[in-house]
Image 1 (cartoon, rainbow, N blue to C red):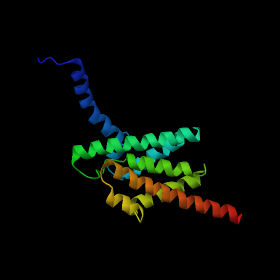
Image 2: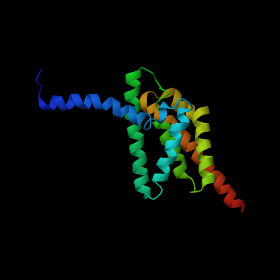
Image 3: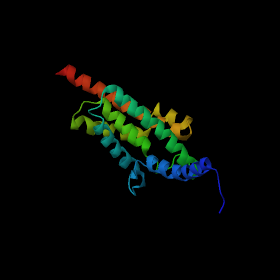
Image 4: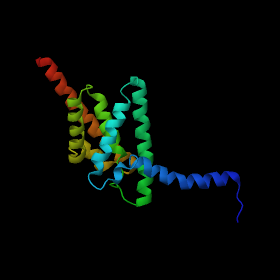
Length: 170
């Protein structure tokens, strides 16, 4: 048995714990392991996140999304380094973040949330300009998270414009 300094023991146990924790977060608690449509499964976790944040203040909501984004960058980067794959299919925390962010911009109505979910998934999958720029130019965990953040902004903005147009025509 080899003795080590207590601080090294803690570091070693954290080193073993960290990859498992990163995978758990990157897969949105396992949604990314879905055998069919893992990105959609991750986005469905985002619906739960958005619903959980409904009673939160605007500042707390912004803080929660900033934390989710930062955790997503960290966890995604960790999985990328472990798998050697630039955008592993199991990483869906970006879809969780993007779907939740999109829904949080919209009126609290099942029809708007369904439209938001579908619009986000459309822009996430198709990746039109300017979303494509984030996907093609930014690497690592930041790139994984940024293209979904851009898809959320585009989907949310277009649906808010549509909502405003509908309200104007009433």
